[in-house]
Image 1: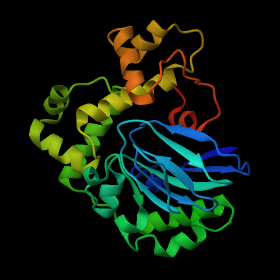
Image 2: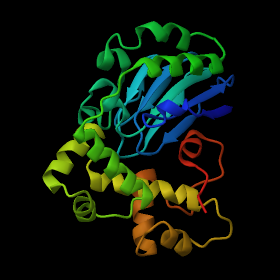
Image 3: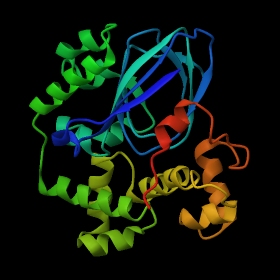
Image 4: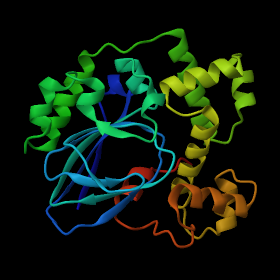
Length: 271
């Protein structure tokens, strides 16, 4: 299976985290676990669609998807050969670009046309075609470069909040955020839910959890060392949080496996 991550044009890095591509000719059905990472996405399936199990029954996905923030893991399963290209937006990117109230799409993977109607009409044809994916990335860069992103006082507050949470790897309280930014807690909660789709506290928990996947790339660390470096007060708290987001114990999770969850979550750790 091919996994590739492509950086957006420099002018788009405040809106888009990356583009990603997954391809495989293997038609054998295989389940993949998707874990919260704090980024919303738009996804185009240009080969066979996937089935999804968010909760309850399995459902067949449409070719074009809008994926909001998720608070728990869910399952995907291919129905044939895999071919998809995704746009992983910065946490507030979709609201800044399209004015979307992201809290309406939390824990939701919806048909793209039901959310943004004709916004992607002119690029969908090539994105759903067998055109080489690097050409599709060029089309997406051109498309988003032409969009006008909103830059308001509210969006600036959210960007500053996201930066503080990221700088602290999620280990920062809401009171520390409001004090640093000189903004009321109620206002911050309201804006963060609108722009990101989660509360600042829950988003911080996801970022702290995600940081585990960077720390774990360091060799020969005990679980207590991983917990400490990831900002957890004790190992039991670390294990509980890991189980919440993955449904597994860290000792039984296969960090080295070549799968979607590890592809999305592993990033180079900064020294």
